[in-house]
Length: 272
Image (cartoon, rainbow, N blue to C red):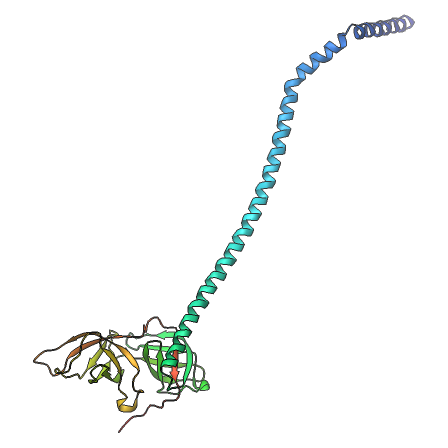
C-alpha cells in the first residue's frame, strides 16, 4: 500500500506541473476557446429561443390588452347606438306631438285630450278599431270624436276606466255626414271591409273633382262641423246612375298614427 500511495503522490505532482506548463504556454486558453466554439451554436439557439419567448409573451399580453380594449369599445359603441336610437325615437315623438299641438292651434274651438294608441284590434278583419290609453277616469265618454294630425280618425265606441276603444272611419259600420269643401255638396262618407272610403249620395250633377277636400258637415249631430277627413281620389258618374261613384283618400295615415286627440267638449247627439 505504501508504494501505491507514493505512486499517486508522484502522479498528482506531475499533473500539477503539467497544468502550470500548459497555463504558461496558453494551452488552457486554447482548450477554453475550443469548448466555447463547440458550445456557441447551442448558446445562439438558447439566446434566440429566449428572445422568441419574450416576444411571444409580449405579444400575448398585448393581444389580451387589445381584446379587453376591443370589448370596452364594443360596449361603448353599443351604448352610444342605444342612446342615438333613443334620441331618434324621442325626436320623432316630439315631431308627432308638435303636429298634434299645431292641429289644436288650428282648430282651437275645441278642448282636446292627448292619448296614445296601445293596440290595433282587427281580429275579425271587419272591425277596424284602435285602443287608446285614456278612459272614463280621464273623462273619455262613449261617442266622443277622435282626431289626429290631418283630421278625423273616428269616435269612441266604448270607454273603460283606463282605456277606450275607438272605431275608425274605415270600419264598414262607420257613416259620417260630410260635404265637399269647395262646392258644399253634401254626402255620407262610408267605410268598407276593404278599408276604402266611399262618398255616397252625391248627385250626378254635382261638380266633384279629384283633389277636392272632404270635411264633416255637422249634420246629424254626430261630429263637429269642419273637420278634415280626406281628399277625393276618384270621381266618376253615369247617365244611368242617380249618384256619383267617389273614392276618398283619408288625410290621416290610419295604419301609422301613434297618438290621437279626443275632443272632450263636444257631446254627440242623435237627432230624431
